Structures are given as C-alpha cells and as structure tokens.
Image (tube, rainbow, N blue to C red; front, side, top):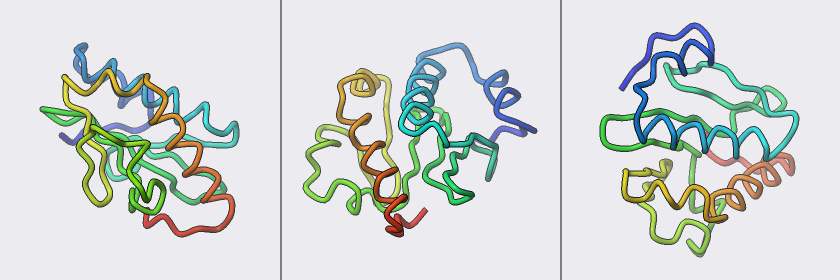
Amino acid sequence: MQYEASDPQDYLRQLDDDWRRQGLLALRELILASDPEIKECVHYKMLGYTLDDDFICHLNAQKQYVSLYVGDAAKIDPDGALLNGLSVGKGCIRFSKSKAKHISEGGIEAFLKRAVEMKRAGTDLGC
C-alpha cells in the first residue's frame, strides 16, 4: 500500500489499527534502537531510515504483511540463520500475521544491528 504522508508521524496516523500497525511499530522500535544516529523520514511513500544520509532500510504496511526492505538480505545474513522461518526475498523481509511474532524473537534485532555495523564499515547493502 502507498501512503501519502508528509512525515513519519503522518504515515503512522494513516495506518489501520490492526496487527500490521503493531508489527510495523515493533520493527520501527528495533530499527531506531539499533543506532542512536538513525534518522527517520518518509521516502518512496514508506518509512525510510538513514545513517549518515545513506539509507539502511525502509518499512511499509502492505495488505497481507509488513515489509522490511533492506537491500540484499543475503549480504547481511549469508547463512540465513537470523531470518530462519521468515519470508525473505532478495531485498525484502515479509512479516505476515502468523510470522509477526518473529519480530521480537531476537533474530531481527541481531540482523538490524549487523546491517548498521556493515553500513558503518562502508559495505554496500544495495539499499
């Protein structure tokens, strides 16, 4: 889905109050907690997250899932251990209603921290 939002708060106000909102908010907290210098904006009609003016990831609430766009997920988690059991495309991790519980299980937090470390080290994540 696309949201015509002027800033992150406007984006959040437009979300339906359902499991997708809760999942997106949980992911948002993990992203912002992964580094104190991460800035949040609206980019490509999604929530965007930058570090030193370079995008790390994007979040969006779709009809059937919440999407975490990360560039090339295999660069961040080459053996797939952190994202095991999730629906992972080349650049997108999809959290359906039944998989939303995985947000708080630790793998996503470790995945995001690794993405920040790699970005700080100058690795191109494909974002």
